[in-house]
Length: 427
Image (cartoon, rainbow, N blue to C red; front, side, top):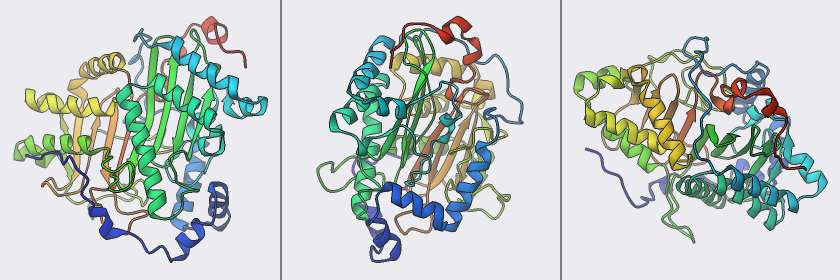
């Protein structure tokens, strides 16, 4: 049985890069905008630029949502009161607004139905610059933006986000490029007018942390989101001991190890992390085994693996413990409501696995149902030099299939009058 390692291991230090190579000497001399401009004009690295070009093509597609076969299942989501403190959240944005110039308010704000919702991405490159970037504004504005996050998310979810930002700063120090990667190298964007009675939302995105939030009265959708870390620990400096994503790792492995051998075999869709049996396109250098990363809003993802409804009670409990971690950004009541919603589709919930499942093996897993899709993946190095996936570089994400991302499935249910009028901030 796997156990959670409570302390950083420092294993990643075996794979620290040579900072004397051109990649890093150039990077540390650039700010985020110069770095992104060089990428877009020089097309280096070519593999990532090719992916960026593919993302631009995907962005041109009208939003449909993640499905299993290209057909969105209707009537899966409902308007409901989750007891969200919407007045406090709106007040936090109003307090932010008071600190902004007219130009900053304009820069921050997009229409509720703007396709720019979909232009978030998790690489360190600032590929789509919108809203306000925290490391380019006054400390008071930065703190006010973080207060919006803190007021919206659960305390433990906000803590996780802050730790991801701190780890990003730590990586920036490791590769001597803090202008590109630091604790505040993230953009914040508003969609719609913040209101207690009409729909609106916000997006917060940057390297290894992207959170999209849709709000309507007392209801909250946090989807899609992406959280990663390379390395997933800080082993020196003022935040020494900080670590994230190890709980999702340990619980997923514990679940796989708990299954009988024949069920493990069915769950294991591929035995190797880079498997010759994988079809073309199943893996790429950036997303690696992930299927639902940035710009994959319309991907068709057939179910794989084994049905959760066939698990024992203890194994089902482990599934829901995993999902609790993936729903951590939600306040507790919203989280409980979402778990209840997921449980209604237990007979259509699948668990699948790639890689080995001994204690030290890197792995990928996915839990997928009509109303949630989560992925966990150990990656090879991007800044570190490990060519094979290692357990210190982790990517995780959550999607809401069948048009649930960005609150899209809820929007047609909102009465038209409430879509256009109501108590809101006057910018």
